[in-house]
Length: 102
Image (tube, rainbow, N blue to C red):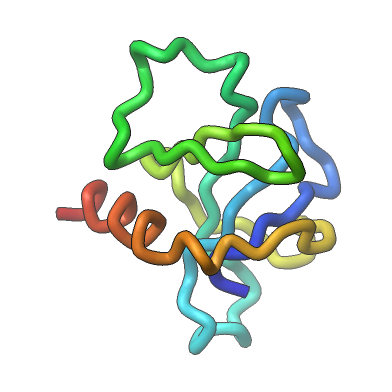
């Protein structure tokens, strides 16, 4: 579901355990979802964060940076369970994607 956070079934990097679904809910029948990785803020150099492109989001009391510029199609079967719903931040998330795509 759009703007839900998913735990990856096989996270390859401990600092990036989650992805955020950015894809429209109208396309739920596809076998892939457009997702962007969420990285623990403590592991990101603050000088690298572009506020409008890389919003900082709190998930379960921990801050994560959304790497919108690394969005990619990901197989639905590789997504774990949804751990958070960030729909309340819809305007920020859509703004970050708009910033990326112009």
